[in-house]
Image 1: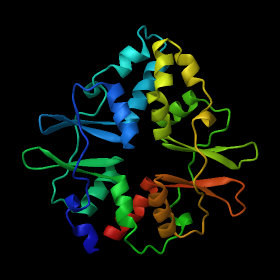
Image 2 (image 1 turned 90 degrees about the vertical axis):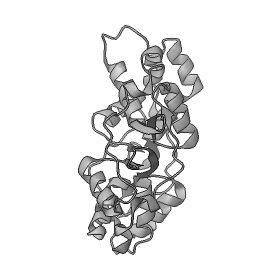
Image 3 (image 1 turned 120 degrees about the vertical axis):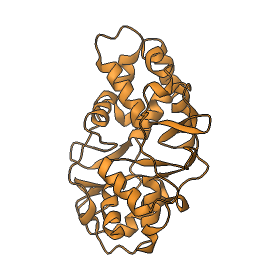
Image 4 (image 1 turned 60 degrees about the horizontal axis):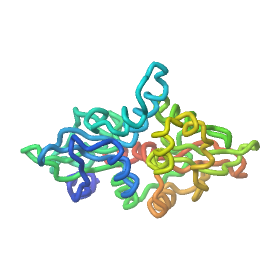
Amino acid sequence: MDLFNRPVIEFATKNVVTVGEKEKVLNAMKIMVNLDIRRLPIIRGDKLVGIITMLDILDAIYSWISDKTTEGSLYSDIYMKNIIEIGTRSVISARPETPVAEVISLFLRHNFGSMPIVDEAGRLVGIFTEWDVLKLASQLDFPHRVRDVMTRIIYVLTPYSTVMDVLEGITIYKFRRYPIVDENGKVVAMLHAKDVLKYFADDETIEKIKQGAGEEVVNNYVINIAKSPIFLAKPDDSVIDVIKKMLEYDVGGVPVVNEEGTAVIGMVTEKTLMLLFEESAQ
């Protein structure tokens, strides 16, 4: 399709929010939460030197808490660390003229969620993300149904699951979105990784961490920080309709329930939808 042969810079975010390499992790967390973004390119002058993501930060928090030999504090050892120390330094980037199809292929091959765009001098000129792919997909006429794109591998939480449980799921199993179900298997809430980041960036949580109450923070029930599901999908729903709803409600993942609405049977995410996008780009 002509759309996928066009230069990626046409669809990328041009006014990229960036941070310097000596910015503290806490400040990066606050920026991500306040602007509702998942990653921040790290620059030195006007050159790209790395990237820090929401998942990098949550992984660092989980690793610190899990290390029983740690003698410092979560606040000083993670929150006050320079971002370059926990971010990714070897960043794969694209040139402005790179075709969209090629970038999507790289996303799938390397499990990326974004790609900075740099010019010949290494200067950051944009960033292209999964969300941009979703916006592109809304312009296509997919005939597929949800059952064609949903993943059947899901990580479900209960109202008694803790923040530590979800940190483990994010870090070890690489799930970013979690339906929370009641004792009958019905979805009662939805938790996204960005909700967890927001929790750890909250002033009340930070104060508890400063006071050494980290155990209390991670033993909090996730139902206390989750949101009601904005909408649910069913197997026979149109993929295009679901994509448009995801964009409208600003969600990157949707639980799929059975026709009766009594059980979660899958998830539709930006990542699973991208497989269709690559198919269309060929």
